Image (cartoon, rainbow, N blue to C red; front, side, top):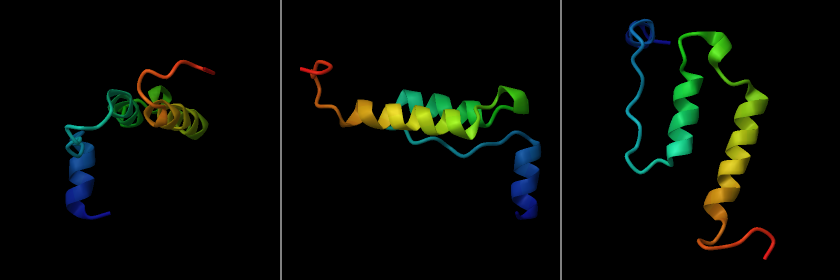
Length: 67
């Protein structure tokens, strides 16, 4: 990690988020960056949320579950 990256981390700086990112992905990323480590999701929670989000975005719009 560079000195600049370390300073940014200490100041709570985060990379810019893409404007077209899914709101649930942005929420997950922001929770991963929480200053309080106990508030951050575990890797298993992250994996599950990403799998669910992937299914949501891959479903054709207007699709009904199972039909």
